[in-house]
Image (tube, rainbow, N blue to C red):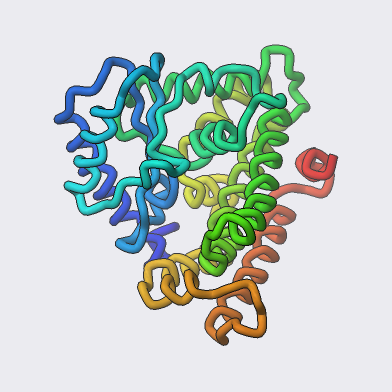
Length: 312
């Protein structure tokens, strides 16, 4: 179904080619045993274009000194025509496996830890360490869905963490653009489209775990989260999601256009300074939200537990 939308399909082909090249490049490196190189962001979602950056992080048992490894990985990234993350940014970091598997939540958990765990589940793929990557996903899902869960329950622990993550993104947007010196227009549009679609696809996955035994809940959540967000929506909603996909196809066409990307980076919060083109894109974002909400109601009956779980 995704092949009907030219920009979605073009981004998917580009992303698949880059991921394949990256895996090949990293396979030539001598990396420590047990290391996992995880790609996230638009490339992992299969939504990247030549305008996209690459975001990744490393998971390993013993963090230790991996400066030389990171340098080798970054050279492999540059060799396929992509730009590595900034050295001091949120990505390109090294985190321990223990960080993913320790108690979820609590005052000691940072925004960075929450972000990496949720992105690992919602939009990631492996570049190196395929077996360890898949095993870690299984272990995290088992933490979210415990053995004593009843059949009628949703994977509510996962859903609550998903909601927490999404609301954190929304709150951090205001901080980063007001106090952090980050550009406003491009982040605002991503919040309306890609961040919202990522969250929505996770809500669908949680909803699909209702009325099934514990093992089935784990298997279904794992299966759905292994899919890129757009494929996840098609898997759950089928052809009924066509209007959502059409709106997202337009968004990807804008993000693949250098002139529009430049306009978005230059757009500030003051509405009096917004161009007609930016207003058009913002209006499309509002319609996109309405389509997502409508799709949720078409997919699940009013009595489905997902509605109460989102509210309470």
